[in-house]
Image (cartoon, rainbow, N blue to C red; front, top):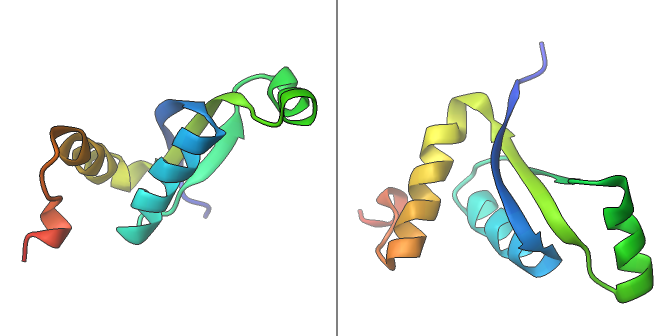
Length: 83
């Protein structure tokens, strides 16, 4: 049975999405990106960058992912890195 994916956040643009996804992957949290609108992909072609990218993580890792992002926003170390 495939894992259920939960919405984590909406990144402002491709750069923010890549930073967030990189942090999650580094913490061994699987991540999926999805353009929030069909026109988002067209923005990459026209403007070189897309806006409003939805980021999803497995449902069972949602709280851990939220905690990681909250720690980064506060400028503190994430739980996984405090040891």
